[in-house]
Length: 157
Image (tube, rainbow, N blue to C red; front, top):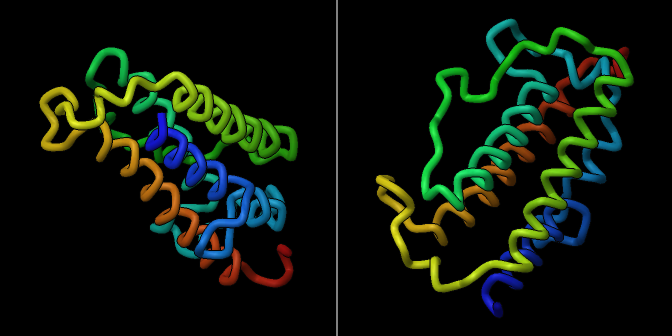
């Protein structure tokens, strides 16, 4: 469980701790209002809200895919237009992120590390690489969110 605990610690730090890169999801998203979350810099860019839904979708599908040794990549890639931009719906999205964090934490607490080097389904990577891939995916998109916050007009902040 030593390696699983290290990965769990990285997930925890990135969510609401003190990660090496100096920014975590909880602190960064506290800066975001529903109006900011729904704002699109251009019609072709994703909003913070869309990116967050994308993150949550991938966290969920990968975690659900571990017992089956596979998952299906949806054509929409978990990037859907946000229809309801209410405060309540934004709070619901933040709860979904927190719930996904709890699910990953519980997963690492019971993880059998013998699966680390096994190939994941028909993918060209192992379970271990996929677990770290989700963490890297989160960090990549947290960087996008951080940049988008800076680009949102002051009138929305």
